Image (cartoon, rainbow, N blue to C red; front, side, top):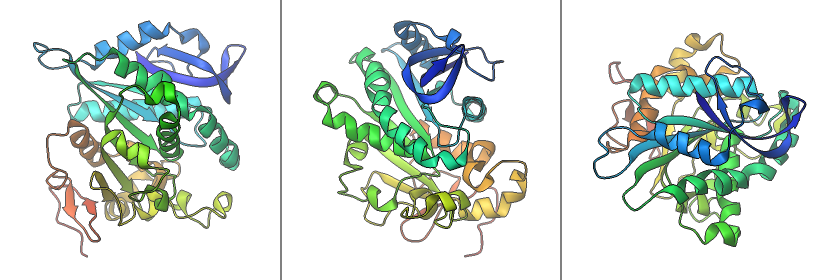
Length: 323
């Protein structure tokens, strides 16, 4: 089964790209389009996810990992499910033993709906924390070692930034202890300047995570300022990286050299420079090792030392790219 927390509206027996009620879905793995009929009670959904998250010795209490995938703009539900499964299968292939779930916010299926998607992302972001992350945190006991991680793509990075910021402004959420372990940003559609150390918009995100890893691709044409729907938008963290003045827990991974050397492998992938991450085993290995968290950021074998304090994605069994 695949587990999805959906906040889309419903018409008939189908979800639509408008904000709606909370639907906790248990989706059979052969289903491409989740339906409202896949809904189960929230408590049962949470318990099922927690059960699948557990792995390894459980002698001293529950141990495991939950990865929450947050999709980007222009992502209908079938594409969300496809990438959810690519992420799950890719991590599983590397040895991941936890569970991957998705937070499905009401994104449209047209790129020109960018501004409407951004509005809907903002409207529904807080529910990621107050009905998702906080619910898992509430179930954890002092001996519980189930770690929660976020993998956000494109505008999904905006969703988590806004969710964490809003959560700290809500007394009913801020009064409870909650946090996540690893935050992974892919093709992040947030302004680079907003992710600087001391920036008010990202302070909550940094405060409530153990580490934030930003994967950026200078060849990402979707995040290019020349893109018609992005006129007036400042440089994005998924194209130019985190700013130099970033917290110590933030890590920048430049994927440009690797993507450029292997872009022929992604000829059939739509918007490849923006979405290739879901289709590449080296990327999956790097994310898996990041989630596992037992190797120093500078020693992960799929990385090289780069310039400006950045790390560079590159497979260990290949000669380094020429600078």
